[in-house]
Image (cartoon, rainbow, N blue to C red; front, side, top):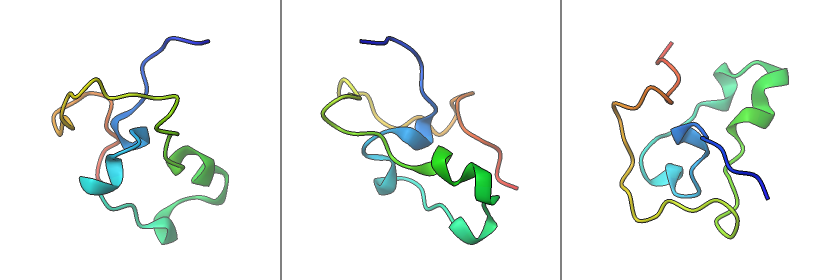
Length: 59
């Protein structure tokens, strides 16, 4: 078991809040945009934080 902090885009429910254009992703970075498994990564009923420092910039 591992405990850590993941970026907001890896949340199992991230697809409800953000859209990722994979055409703009670098090939080696595609693995970073795969969503987390809901049975392992939990959100603890905390909403998506658009102001989080754990969000990649929009560029």
